Length: 194
Image 1 (tube, rainbow, N blue to C red):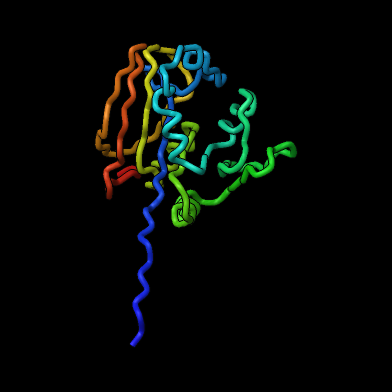
Image 2: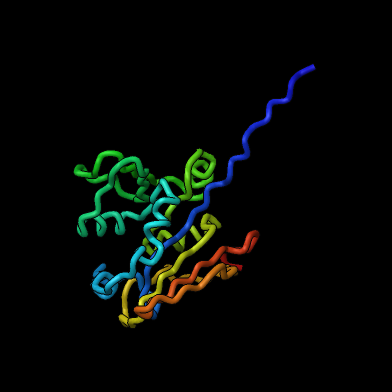
């Protein structure tokens, strides 16, 4: 008689978008400028970002977001894993440990979810968020809305026809007028155009 071996239950890693927008739905000005967002005094805990960063161990971003992050002085250091989706080869001066991929989103993220670890932060930009939505590869969105209209810019999600039902998990209002909405993508919801 064979003994049963119990295996620990591994929780599926979630892909979470956590991003700031203007009240009119833009994540940056057309030239990538974020002054309208970064010049605001932030509350203690930085809109929950400090706690959120402790819940993730992988950051996924598009090439333009990667390049903008470098210009803003971001450091790409272990132990966090950095994955940059790009159709171009990595730049010669890319920080060590940053992984550039040109794979299909669905199979790549499925493989990433099966690896042990914490949740995955899909940082943006709008084109990559849209592509992940269309692949059904996002679990949750945390959208922090600054009380300002900027009139034009890079949209939160690249525009194309889609229907993605959401469940509202929470809404938080901060003293400085910022509002944070936390959504879960409805399971089994169609994310591609009908």
